[in-house]
Image (cartoon, rainbow, N blue to C red; front, top):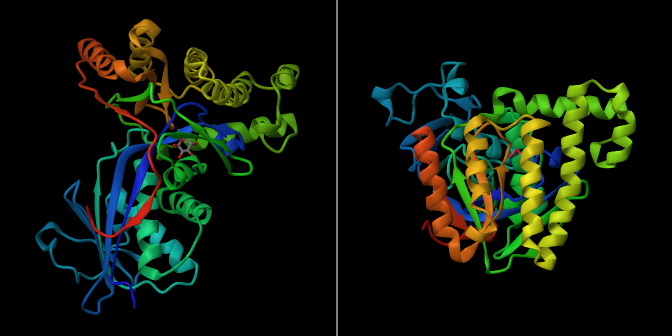
Length: 394
Ligand code: GLA
């Protein structure tokens, strides 16, 4: 029987280490988090050419004209009427940011040759939005999983992740790598994922129950689409040209050092971040496996310095949070801390002792509030399960 309704859930992720390495075919070490985006998608009962998307979390709606293949300009007085004419070419720009990810994912199914019915799509999420923990990937993957059920398609997890990445490239204008989508699809309870972003192979690494992954949101918002992310990618490509390699994955630290003379300082530093971060990530996975958490923490601290000084993607608030967290030290339960995600604000991740997670969070949040006046959000998570299709909305 034709599926009328489909529900799904997909998690956000936090990256323990390995930042801006995915699009350089390198290594990352993320975990899916216990924060999910939930989707319910339903075929409309009455024939229509307008799909309606609702975010319950934000109290916003967007209307997609299937005839015009664009969002419809809805004036606020007519917000409940679905059959407005698709008039303004500015509608796409005016549509809420989240709705572009929805449209982007659904459009990928159209491109694969599937005929899309008019739908009502509802979203609810507890993934912090725009905070560097992949609320966008959680949304994309959840939409893809629900559409897969509704349409009866059988794409495998990798195909789903790539479809979502493509949607983000085309509809959000962010030339992201594949880490976030892979994490949201393939996350496993109690395990981190060492990703080889050249082959997309995942190695699962158990996380001891004694560990907590504490996420603190600086409440300073980044915007990856603002060009800095794209710029970093271009700078990495420039470094590859100068080094005559396919990707920075193929470069060792000593090769990079010998080539320094022929590289502009900025490009050299960008490449140094990626090359050293790859090495740190592989080492961190090894230390995590052997239970050497102090060493994992030191690599995280070094990663932060590299992001701050070589890749220049942190900001004062984030640097402050990391300094506060690191100052607690291992006696206070902190092994290491660093910014996580694309950068320019967002969250830090602390590798901490599970038994001290609450005290760590409250100390960091308290000192940050005292220094900046900003009330940060904090939560502690264990590695969580990846996306699934479910029977009910809740
Ligand atoms: C964003 C992107 C990812 C990755 C990170 C940085 O989250 O979506 O692909 O590049 O930034 O590590």
